[in-house]
Length: 223
Image 1 (cartoon, rainbow, N blue to C red):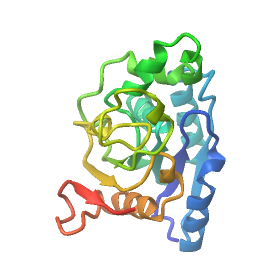
Image 2: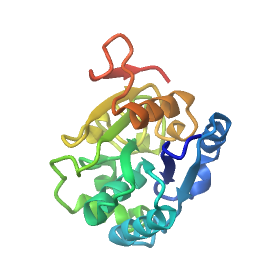
Image 3: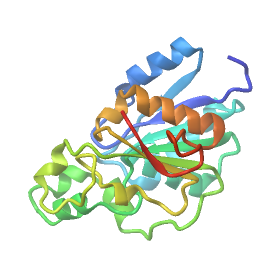
């Protein structure tokens, strides 16, 4: 790939490690594209600590142009980092199933003394802050899922549609340049070929590929 094609940096979610992106990274290598991961302490680490660590990781990769892909909590780390550091190397970002506008399931769990520690520190810190209302100076695309299979099914009252962990409404953020709903679960986003294809379309073109609706229209695609 040309030096002008940005590298992609993947940021994982809660309870995970950068290794969860192995299949996506394998596919990218077959395309001749370069990718990296950023791993952080998703349970014990603070939100700002994770964001600052991501900024340092990007600085180490500079001066190559970079795109970001964050899954779940990783997407919130990406947004927090962009607001705190505004790195010059970053061009676009895609968030996968990130509860930008709050998390009903997380708020229920936080009310249960025996389970609240399972959410760690970073996610509750995001939920305690006002939802950002504007684009952070970078084009951001958001992918949501509507296949309701996951641990969130154990939480009563989860709004539909949802991906089994995060409701679609919790991903509809005013600061996003584009938003699309795919027929995937929260975890499927880590290996879905359709999810990677849509993420690459946004990273390369600044919009998702909305079947039958035109490139810049909101919509839903199959997974």
